[in-house]
Each structure stands twice: as C-alpha cells, then as structure tokens.
Amino acid sequence: MLLAREAAGRPVTVGLIGAGKFGTMFLAQVRLTRGMALVGLADLDVERARRQLGSAGWDAPAYAAASPGDAFLNRRVHVTADALALIAFPDIEVIGGSTGRARG
Image 1 (tube, rainbow, N blue to C red):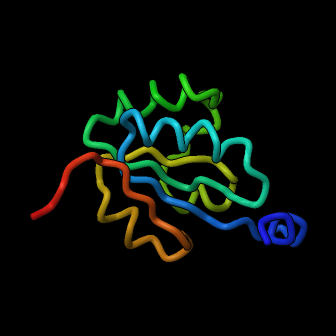
Image 2 (image 1 turned 60 degrees about the vertical axis):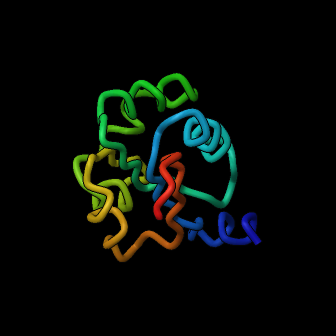
C-alpha cells in the first residue's frame, strides 16, 4: 500500500509529537520509508527536535519548512512547539505520539 501511494504521488502524511528517544527512532525510519512523508514534528524543545532530526540523518533544509502548509507542498518538515496546530492541520493523515508522558 505504501509503495502504491508513493507511485501515485500521494504518500501517507505524518505528524509526530515528541522528539525523544523513541521519536528519534521513528524519525530515522520515516526518512527512508517510501510512501510516507513526515510533514511536522512537535516538541516543547524545538531546538532539541531539530538536533534530533539531524542525528537521525535529516539534512537541515529538509526540516526548515516555515509552516505545515509549506512542509506539505514542498515535502519538507515543519518543526514546532505547538502540537495542537500540528494535529489540526488537515493534510496530515496520521499523528504519532512519542512523548513518554502518560496521561491519567
């Protein structure tokens, strides 16, 4: 299914909340997964999120999108502290959470 989406030019669009240990493992994989496109990454520490993208193999221009819309249109990543804005962006199909914080 992912390869079909890639061939059709419609990769599954993803937003990730959390750039810690597990989020970074996902960042390393999604960069190489055909048929998936990371649109946004939300973390309370935006600079750490950018460092984690770099440590996962992403080039800085790939995560320099000014907005989710810019990221979606240009196949780049928008990094933000605003998880709710990322969740609300209508062109993201899947939101993954990797914050490590349990809610009670």
